[in-house]
Image (cartoon, helix red, strand yellow):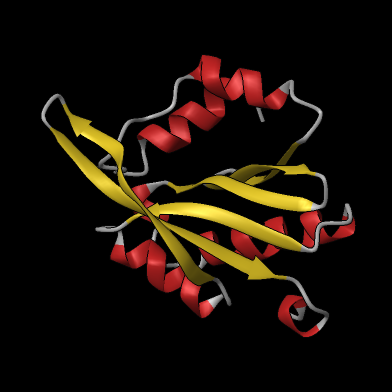
Length: 143
């Protein structure tokens, strides 16, 4: 999947925060630590460094949301990390993104911290990010 395809899916996701550019995705795709799982309508991208995974983005086009594609991408991302030797995964999610938080919590992620005013919403407004972690065990990765 090309950087332009990732940007296009992200644009079509109805994300209310900043959409990542094709250039940003291109940089990630050329990073040897990047892990990507994808299908024509969604993707999950992150990286693996020193045995720890980090989920950077899950995007599902708006018309396909609510059909389990995000959950499948997350599960496949976790399996890819585990296959490469990760023992855990971290992520950041906007405090107001309740739908994503529910997905992560139901998948075994736990909130471990908050980053105050982490996301810039506009010139005058910022939003907190929740830091979440999932420790991988054999049972946590069973489908």
